[in-house]
Length: 435
Picture 1 (cartoon, helix red, strand yellow):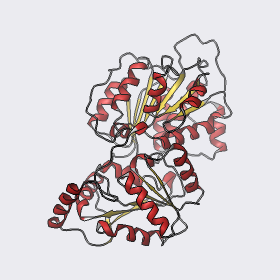
Picture 2 (picture 1 turned 180 degrees about the horizontal axis):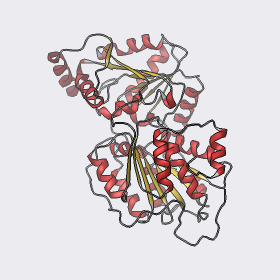
Picture 3 (picture 1 turned 45 degrees about the vertical axis):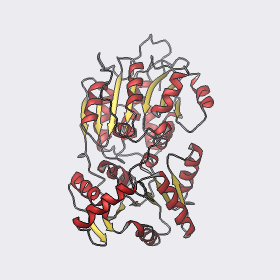
Picture 4 (picture 1 turned 90 degrees about the horizontal axis):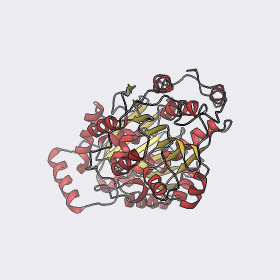
């Protein structure tokens, strides 16, 4: 398939991968030809292997990395997504000489510095922690041949524009760059112009369109009644996993405690949790010990659990594209799923923006749509009160996951020079690998 090296084909067969997804079928051959790629595909469509397989194919024919260098750099916006990508790639790299490392915030710096001392073939990182390591001279990017930006739109939303500009200035101008995203907007076009060289644009689904096998609906409910309505839904499928989205970290934590008090095993992940806490909670969720996971948009990006069939938007997102990302956590890899949005009077504007983006009208699962003369004053009152339980504007998120504000800077270090074909290196080919 695609002329991938035999060791990768063997791993594909051993892990049960059959027919490639549309994004894989279109992206992999072009990446293997050395083209820069701008890939637009909804979440859950196999983007990780779409870039991961050709990156590993190229590196299996390149020289070994020097100490404190990486041959390929993959940037992702959240710790969970970094972990998901690194775990997936490591499953294919085990029977090869390739070394995959991950670095994220919320974990100790010294162990990460020690891992990078010998160099690595593929480094998967969040932008914030990568800059920490670069500033400490634990890593240099002068020998990086391939750059992947995954969920690039989300990195912009989280305020990583300054980090991306700094990282871009440290990379070789002659490299192959792959950018993947579920949505496309003006700023994404600016990033593409700055990072990519004569890129091939691949779009396998319309931006803003969620997976086809998700049953979507809306339940109109006052903000103060949402918790009890959620409890009712959760108790209709007590043995199935459910992901619940809260707009704020405080709201996620408060709702988690409330559901546990009501006898529903619930965990939470958000920016205030350490990396260890988040990983333990996710592991409990995967194993079914925790049936419900309450999360914010940032923390939930990267969750890939095939058995999760239910997504509840306890609070509607103010950015309509985030709704697509949220419900994309279910119906993974061709499975079916259900997504229910709770809409309070103050959220009618958010609901209309979501429906306009997706060009559909959500079916009504319960309640009656709020009248405009009620929705307007409720929205104004909510903004005047400020952030409330499970509502209000997004809180500022510090640390490795950005600040959740729209970036002001629009300038990037404009990339020049031709893209480098996959598998080429900047130096002499002294220690070439074979698959």
